[in-house]
Length: 93
Image (cartoon, rainbow, N blue to C red; front, side, top):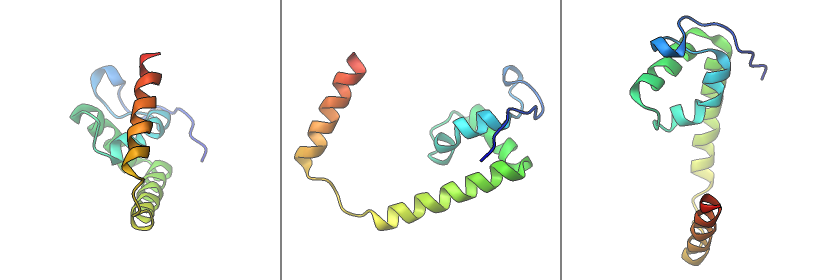
């Protein structure tokens, strides 16, 4: 994947479309629907107008769907608790 920052409309300050680099950096957040509406609109506009980023988004979504289907086992609750505790320690550091 060669993602070069290329102009794609307006600057982020004006809420216009983003460039390939920004789209790539926020692709997973976009697919998870965790971006605010302005950011999501900017990423969506870019993906819809950029063949390379559109292809990456489609591929990422396919891989995510396959992983969800294949990975149905859950970690034991004790392991999940230990992981969350360690993540909290890391966040506090």
